[in-house]
Length: 469
Image (cartoon, rainbow, N blue to C red; front, side):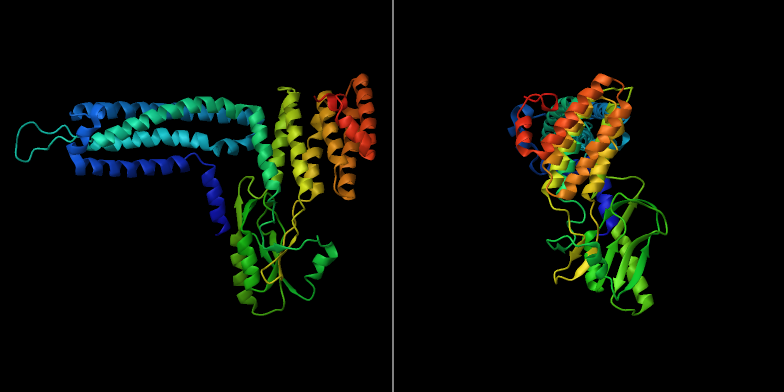
C-alpha cells in the first residue's frame, strides 16, 4: 500500500463523515431491501404484524414524516454539542487533542445513527403511496410499506437509546482524567510497537555506530530528495523493505514519522553494490518517494513523541496561571511514569532491519531512551518547578524510575534529570520552607537510589511521595 493511502486511511478515521457516510449507505441498502420485501409479500405479511400493521398510507406517511423531521433536528443538535465539546477541549487542553475527539467512534456512530435513520425514512416516504380514488383503469394503487415502517420504528427506538448514551458520553469525553488516561494508554501501547519494529527482521544485539557504517563500505550512494514539505505522517515500511530487496540495496532513512522536512531535503540514502545504469536507478529511486506521506500537522501514527507532547501540553496548560490545576498535572506525571515503565520493559528496535535471507536492507534509527526522556521531562520541568506539590510528585516518579533502570546508561540519564529538577527548583520556588523541604526529599531520593533495602522500606511508607496509602 502506498504511504499516501495509509495517510488517507488515517485521515478518514479522524473525520466526522466517514463512519456516518458508511451508515447512510447502509440505510439506503436497507431501504431497498425492506421495500422489496413489502412488494413481494405485500399484505400477506403485513396482516401478521398485528399491532404494527397499518392499513392506511396516510398514517404511515405521517409517522415517517415525524421520524425524519425529528431525526434531522436531533442530528443538528448532536453536531452542535460535539463542536462545542471539541472547541472547549482544544482551548483548555490543547489543539493537538482535537484529533482524539474527531476519532471518537461514539461521536461518529451517534451522528451516523441519526443521519442514516433520516435518510431511511425519507426513502420509505417516497414509496408510501395513498393511491387514486377515481377508479380509473390506470389509477395508482395504494401502497403501505408495513415492514419498512416497522424497521423505521425500530431505528427510531434505537436512536433514542443512542441519544441517551450520547448525553452520558459527552461529559465523559471532557473529563480531564479520561483525556489523559486515553493518551497515556495509547502511548504505552505504541511504545511496544515503536518505529521501526515492523520493518523486516532484527538481530538481538544493538549495533554500534562503526558496525552500521561498515554496511556502506565499497558501495555507491544515491539520495532520494523530497518534492514536498511538511510533517512526515506515514512511512510504508514494508514497501521500503521490498524495494531494497528487489534492487539489492540498503536504504537508510534520514527522517522518522513526525519530523518536518522541506522541499529538497534528502529523505533517504540508498546504497548500491556498484554503479550500473544511472538512468534506470534514478527511475527506481523516484518510486521510493511514494513510501513517504506528508501532511500539514503531526499525528500519532508511528510517532510516540507526538503522544508524549500531548501529555506535556496538558500538564503545561494545567499549571498555567489561568487554570492553576496541579492535580491534573500530577495525573499527567503518573502517565509519564507508566510510559517510562513501558519503555524500560522493552528492548529498543534494532536500527538494522534484514530481509528473509538475512541481508541488511533498511537502516532506521528509533527514538532513543535519552530523546524520549528529554521530551517528557525537559519540556515539562519549567512548569513543574514552580509548584511544590507537582515537584514532590515529579521527584517521586523520577526516583522510582531511576531505581528500576535496567542499564547504567539509563540510570545516568535519569540521575541527570533529578539534578536538573533540583537546580530548577532553586530558581523557581519562592518559599524558603518549600525549598528546604524538597531538599530533604532529594537527599532521601539519593539514598533510595543507592540503597535497595532503603528503597523498599520507603516505598511501603506513607511519608514517601507525600503519602500513599
